[in-house]
Amino acid sequence: METQKQFKRRFSFEFFPPKTDKGWEKLQGVRNQLAEVDPDFFSVTFGAGGSTRDRTVQTVLDLHKRGVSTAPHLSCVGATRDGIAELLDIYRENGVNRIVALRGDMPSGMGAAGELRYANELVSFIREHSGDTFNLEVAAYPEFHPQARTAEDDLKNFARKVEAGANSAITQYFFNADSYFYFIDRLEKMGVTIPVVPGIMPIVNFSNLTRFSDMCGAEIPRWIRKQLEAYGDDSDSIRKFGEEVVSEMCERLLASGAPGLHFYTLNQAEPSLRIWHNLGLDNRDKISF
Ligand code: FAD
Image (cartoon, rainbow, N blue to C red; front, side, top):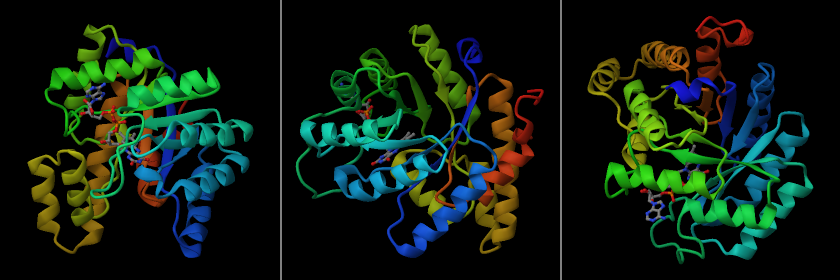
């Protein structure tokens, strides 16, 4: 973890672009609550294959102009170089300076793979087209990407994204801090030393969390799963237990040198804010860990 300690900590919140007017209104409230804690940036997801293209652009530009620097996610699966270039130009013209560059997962049965196959190709293309305009974030997988042939391959593929020009990374969420420490150790041994910021998923709802985790290959440790199962419909207990487990993990990550946290908010402010307050991040220059 030594290399991670040299980086300045940064804190960010991720949203998805709302589909309805009601969702849009809700996001405005969530945005206002989270802007108060002065995060380094917000980010907005992108539906692979372009399904949320216009909504992502609209959400990013709205959040960005209202004062918190906002980073669009951009995935290359199913996209053309021209289509990506068009988006890059829109973002540049509007002062956006950070992009989360991803391959994405094409929904089954939807269209062709696109002109760029992997995220490292997207990073190269963005550098080719936009030079150093954007700070480029890429995805990292402490528990390894579900499609990786081997752990070794996945690490090498991560390194390709860094070689292509990624500045920093955000991880898939995890509930086992050791997987993150081990991942960082392996990167250090390979000489890959960019900030890798843990992605944090607050635990709010057991069935949604299980569904998501199965899809993205994130493991819910047995002791957590069993405890959550035992709470059944008791959402208060799930929330309290989840908050405690995730806050403790975040404290351990930061104390060990993680260069910040990125919260998957699912467009809810409270679950992330409770962890934030537990960690004392309101006075983040003064925290002792
Ligand atoms: P890649 O880095 O391209 O890796 C994908 C797989 O291919 C891995 O198994 C890797 O080992 C392998 N691979 C990579 N490069 C090569 C190569 N050159 N040759 C052979 N194999 C290779 N999805 C969305 O649709 N929208 C979002 O907004 C979104 N946001 C995300 C944000 C974060 C922080 C994270 C962690 C994930 C996000 N995802 C999002 C999910 C992501 O798109 C999926 O996990 C996707 O399956 C992989 O994307 P990637 O950018 O990691 O792909």
